[in-house]
Image 1: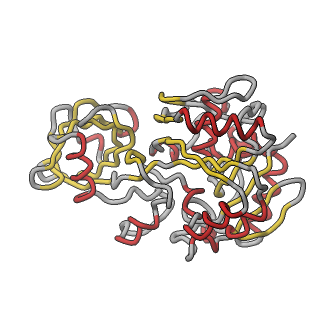
Image 2 (image 1 turned 180 degrees about the horizontal axis):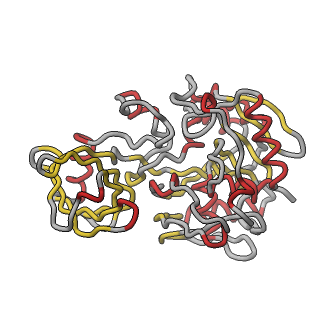
Length: 342
């Protein structure tokens, strides 16, 4: 299949720059045999008792840094942890940085360029590691909002807005955005309906925003991200399926991790490794029955994933309906609930 097969026109005014308030007031497009316009707080009525929500409990870190190498201003967006004090980062201006350069971000907080890679990517080794590095990021960094949210800089409100109610384990540099729609009140309503939930952890990388640059999607190479599935979560998923319940992935990150860990018969095993799974039409899903996910970029790996999950023609029709009906797209936008195609 060609990347162009997954293209569509999106008016710029459909791109959300701030979330709905309250979070569960966002619109929800139910995509099954037909399309139905709903809102997120109706989710308990759209699921069944015995269904199991699987959510991503990663926590976004303030991974965008501004600093200087001498008189040259430098912006670095961390995207993958490579050690206790080392991160891969996208740097601007990457071409003007050399191996051995020191970039100062704040008094007592700096990093050395250890390696230069393609596309403005560098490997940075900081002068502090572990919890101390995370503390410095929280003190001096900004939330790494996606590039399509065009405003001068993230503000203090983004520190709350770009974090899910599930956020617990630090390490992501992009939010698992389907989780942004949940509130304590919605979680209570789901529990009252008999819908349980369990966590997985996938530390989302900035590579999730990288465009597909090849014409043939078979030639695209996915970025790798680290994920974990605990024995308790694996057991809960297996028990749900054995009892006839459905596994509902909250977001593509949870889905990708579940599918990475599932065996051919759908049984889930504990997992702690990187995954670079690339799901395109023709993929046979093994672990996930229902997917809650926001609206994705044209020509993106995530739009390819939802086409694989719910059917290409169905998803093209759903996106055309969403655009015509004024749904808000991308990270701060509205969401959809997809039933897996037969």
